[in-house]
Amino acid sequence: MLIEYLKNIPLFKHLKDSQLKEIAARCKSATFRKGDVVFHKTDLSTDLYIVNSGKLKAVLIDEEGDEIELARFEKGAFFGELSLLDGKGRSATIVAEKDAELFVLKKDLFFDLLYKEPRISVELMATLVDRLRKADEMIESLAFLEVGERLIKSLLDHATAIDGPGSSGDYLKAGKLTHKELAARIGSSREAVSKCLKVLMAKAIVKEADGNILIARSALDRLKSNERT
Image (cartoon, rainbow, N blue to C red):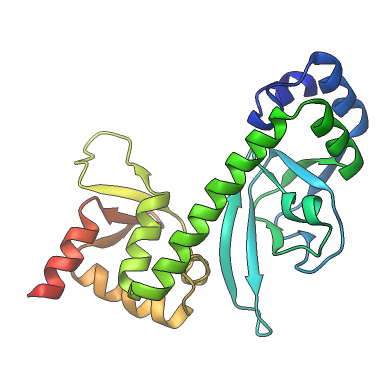
């Protein structure tokens, strides 16, 4: 039930049942297939989107179609808050990575709830601060880290433990990713990522298994150690 789902979203956890019912009655559902664009950078719209299912990403796309990935959104996450607050054009393009269902909340309803329950603003600010910190980390990475370090850091950030018998624990699973996707995540070119992966595989810092990229838990330390020798 939508009301129960909304209760589990931090942004709305302070709302009364009557307010949650109002959201449920007035918000709309929208579905997007893999590869669909929810909105483009600079689009003039002020809706807030809440992810009910699927995965989406926020990207910047240049004239040649190359991407830089800014953020990823899964169930329970929301996006669109910047244009909601300042009324200006969208700051990034949102693309569905998997089939997705979104709940769409209009600006007037959100502000009406905000005035009635100011604690929503605290949760909103917490999310904005978290996203600002991540943006600072990305800027720092682009400014000071080489491609190899950026690539390893990104793989480790998205990696999970490998399940099943015989797993040594020395490697983590980063998933099935194309070189183009990796390049978008770290703000580099596909060619540079391909060359870097070859080097990392030769050093056994990264390897492939069943189409998945595996990365050593000690990848950053090993890379720095190799650079010193």
